[in-house]
Length: 257
Ligand SMILES: Nc1ncnc2c1ncn2[C@@H]1O[C@H](COP(=O)(O)OP(=O)(O)OP(=O)(O)O)[C@@H](O)[C@H]1O
Ligand SMILES: [Mg+2]
Image (cartoon, rainbow, N blue to C red; front, side, top):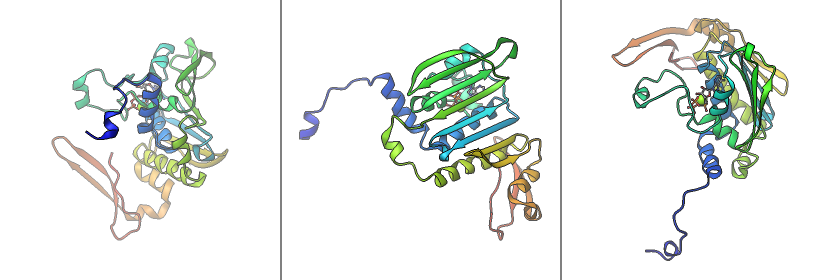
């Protein structure tokens, strides 16, 4: 046994707030991780309109508004707890996952390391719920006027995790990661209208209800249409379809749907 291990502290269970901060570090690596998680929640909620607003590469503010199913007050309060999800119920469900999320980790993790606000409504006759959490601590829960859907606003990301804060890159780099996630999701869900603003400047406005080909043209231009080939394959447990560009062209990629 080494000298240092013989003088180590005794084993203990960590306090809940520290557990949450450590877990948050695994889910949220940078502002784009927050965007990814919130986009996935909006998509799982059946949204057809998703608006993403960012300030300073997401370092100051990330806000995602959707017109999905929303939540009632009790679900909203549970949703910001760790291991709380509506997407699976039992172990067997792990073998038939049809949603993007299922861990029940994302909202709690994001709320543990930011100033976090959620406005949500699943029934306009019942009013909407507002929850505000600072660094994992519930500060306010109340009623508010807000239409059906959900808006999550994340400010001061990593304010209480200095190591993560220190390793954030420039605004341009963080924004690039965010855009990348948005473009990926917009390709996989061409029926959804996605908007992205950065420091109030509109960067992307992709109207919804589109075929994949149209979404590709919205993003990459008309000329891309000419170089795409449909691909489709089916196995017992797998089926995929999409479009692939000819290998000789610069942007070689395949979309799985
Ligand atoms: N935009 C939204 N609209 C409606 N319900 C939402 C929205 N975002 C979250 N929820 C609800 O809150 C729950 C918790 O969300 P959270 O992202 O923390 O976990 P998850 O999506 O279930 O799993 P994962 O941690 O893998 O993302 C979800 O299961 C869902 O029921
Ligand atoms: Mg989620």
